[in-house]
Image (cartoon, rainbow, N blue to C red; front, side, top):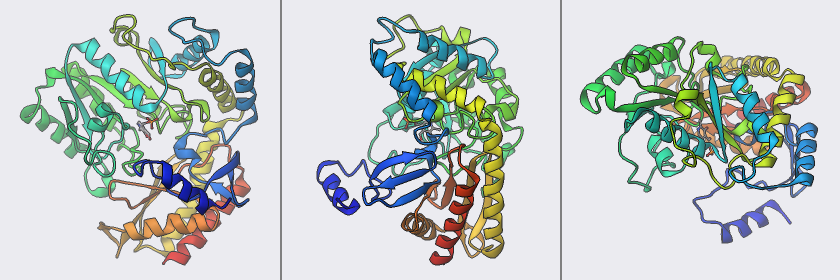
Length: 424
Ligand SMILES: Cc1ncc(COP(=O)(O)O)c(C=O)c1O
């Protein structure tokens, strides 16, 4: 059956709210390539939105999951736990940039964020949470409230939980830097919520859905100071940036700070639904036994996959490869920018989280949403899965598997170039 026939069938049975970017129905995927129902092959520059950092169906991950499946698929970690959950927690708390840490496992990124906030409120006895404009933290009610992007994540879905506030994110390209953001945060304490009623501040080290804006140098350090002054916990959302994506196991490491809590998901298990919250022992231990969990929390398949993913990252030096891939991608985009300076306003990235921002007439205030849309469609037509993002819907984001062979990286860049040439 053709892709469009499947799309028609999907549209008959799925609610439209759960849309898909491309009418491309996958049948097989390996490392950096996906094949569809029509036998067409695509180079994947999206990794299923930053999930398959170790490539599609990495043989070690598949083998670990098969072995686990032969043993058992579920007993419930809250009833009869198992060694792999303990081992994954041991590995993660050792890798996290937190001195004396504890972990929990849940199933999705949104659930990790929910639990991070629950834990922060329990530990501080305070209700308030401050997030940043343009941030994305998930689709549950609390996470929607934290998210700073209305369409499509919040539109029509309110009311959201009370006691959530937003500070402007320091996106330097948009002319708004650290000092302005910190001043606005200070103003928030004066005008909206007193600082000693704030349980936590949550932030992504590089905004993902919001547009791939990295926090400016030194910003997280300043935020850490603000948190320490007021007894506020700092939650770093590493769901998109974590697990070697930015060239470090966690992007927080670039800032040289210690978060109180970190949320981890996506790349942690190569596509198996498991997520984690890791934080300081005294903070994590605040909730009563039984207050945290879930039927599928710490899924055995996810734990087995997670352990294999961490081994692959080490064995195949994926942090180094993230940097190499990121450098090559940025160089390719900068070359394109030289040819189209009026359309490509900015090329930026951290490790293998690379983006270009599309504008009109060389004006940062004129986001080029049409070109962004046209480019992702054209790329798909030419065999490249390319994602967009941004509050202004004008950013192309590249999230290659960190295992991408250099031949495919070059081929993908070439297709991207052809697609761009065809669109302008
Ligand atoms: C930074 C960040 N936080 C939270 C989430 C939500 O994760 P999930 O979709 O697994 O619920 C995402 C997903 O894109 C994300 O990028």
